[in-house]
Image (tube, rainbow over all chains, first blue to last red; front, side, top):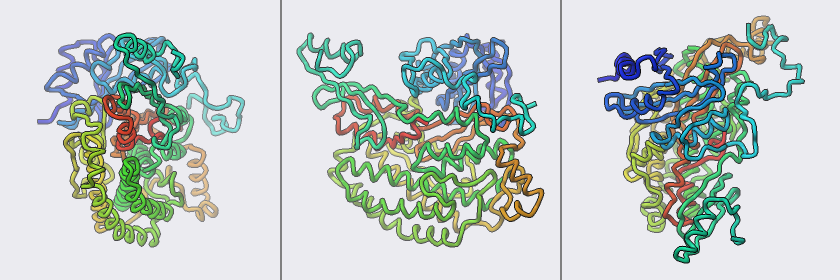
Length: 172
Length: 411
């Protein structure tokens, strides 16, 4: 019995109503969004509901969307995997700036460093994390370098200007 | 407190102070790393020790963090390949192929069978070198230098094969979007066939030296065990997970690059200790050899790359003589290739486990966000728990049996 995406959607919608939204098949992975208030419960349901059984956290990452509206500035993406049925699922939650979301370290031990990395790179605050401090960058750093406002290259350089290749920065 | 290396507000300082006042026991602090010959890379662990026993450890990572994810956001796709080389540098071709496969998945490119089979061959060669280094260095860490000397020359032989294929040895930057940059030379196949004859003999000898060696068994059995439940919780994948008894392998679960065409078994261990990890890697080397033989036997004729002029560089002589080829060449080198808006995740079985690329594009020439799922980074969290209660010398053995590669850890 394969785990059907329609079943996952129905099961979650019944429990969380409007807090889970935008279900869609993104290539080979079923994805949806959850509100930041319910994300912990959604992940817990995905993990502990025996008919869903997404028991493995493949990845957790942050993304910065500076061009979105103020409630969608950051996203935290959780990728879960059910090894028994071999089904992957992707859950996103969008956050305003300053970003704050419940930790899932109580559900998955491996979320610990993944959340620290997201904090380090994006400044996303995981409430309830046992030791939320920088991990890859040095402690003295004050910025969160993966945010889009930090340019990587010297802005004085002109040889890599997109206008010279018939494009603008926004690619229109 | 003057004898401490740590600031007085550190939690270990408090623990030492407390236990000294309670029952007079003298705990000490040991700095393992950041640079130490026994750690094979830059890892720091602050250990809280009771004599020779480890009570607790605090790992620090990030010593060779090079901000690959940030750099990747500013590079066209073909330039990101060189970043993937430098993650798990013991098996660069796997990272390279994984990256090309991610891009091909994004662009819906179907790679010809021949290229897929050759990719399988080179990925399995990389897996062999990865496991070879891990296991032979594990031998060195337990005091057996001979095994290492027996097999290490074969890494050199594999590097010679890489050199024939792509011109580079360690950081290979192999392949292109759509396939390989050139047909493999007859010399490459010749070297590969010689390797397939000579290496199994040495590997058998290596196994015989270790698998029933009293000293080795004493040093590794029941050292750093991890239960299957804990292994899943800590996000272990690859040989370290399989040693704990779970048969999850991306090659079987989500076959890529025609892995479904080959017969192989997924070796699993039982207790997840250092010895099981060693044995699982040993067994995987045999499976890899068998996959390479099958791929060579079934190797189809045909093109070495997909017909995608938008992404695949035209032959150099055409660039000099043919207008169209020149335009394509220019556009590809400048990174001006059509890229759809999409979001994909592609995973392969790397040397250490599930190596995943989570790629978000917004239609511009660079990724909007690229996240590397680096198996080392995730499973190194379990290290603290594995070494607790063990001896200092066990900590070294466990570290090398986990095969933590600094480049992959820190990206």
